[in-house]
Image (cartoon, rainbow, N blue to C red):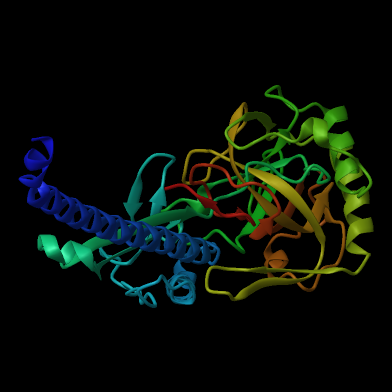
Length: 387
């Protein structure tokens, strides 16, 4: 009797087995398609990461590099194919929001497309396509959409290398203000005549003495000590290396003993004969000659340029090529390489006149990048993926 009951169910078992195998095959096929999709998406993401980093790595100090930024982002995307094939990003020269390569400003949280060469600090690369399916076709899905996006930033450094001693001078940020056409290669003069007149341009107020070790007004002994340290490559200045975003004390006073030491030290540095070059935003040379190259902070001030003192926030860094020191109304050296000195170096008739001149020298610093945008007076060599 039991055998007769089982005979009637043999067909049902065969049907169940066939349906189960079909289901398993379909699910296995779907799993294969989804695994292929996941791998393609990961490869596409790696390609966008490489493209964004390559683009950000070519951001400079102004908009003249934008075409290079786009071509390098395209190149590295093309060099990193995914399993479907090579990736050909559109250059998007118009910088449309939905383009494959978008330049803009990353402000620690959001990305805003922009072509402002004084502020652009980020490159976003994005790509979307369709990949063909195999088993999912059985369910009517012939393709799957796959996309990836990556944003990399090139920012000013958080701080300067620990072995670098800051020169105790703060430069204002007006040359790197979006409303300004100056910046890199800009001529800087910090001059006073104690109310005198008729000599060179008086007090252009582009700088002030700085106290990198705190927010108090820099004292004469502190300023003299930092001038000596900046001239000595063996000094360790870890204890006085602030970060961007912190305040430092500033003063536009002109202490005589400071200028006596500065004049002596500058002459020694100038006479080494080392040439230093500064260029403007077009790549044109604004200075090429001997001088004293120092590292200084850039601080936030009101613009246009005006006298400043008191605590000021560090918003960036720059190299400063000092080309002249004026002490007791006399220029310290005869510097024929700086054409601007013809209107700056005074006659000996005003012994109260003191000051210094030089040029912004935009440069790269081996340091971690800051998280937010800042004056592009110096850039960190390291890039960062932020999104």
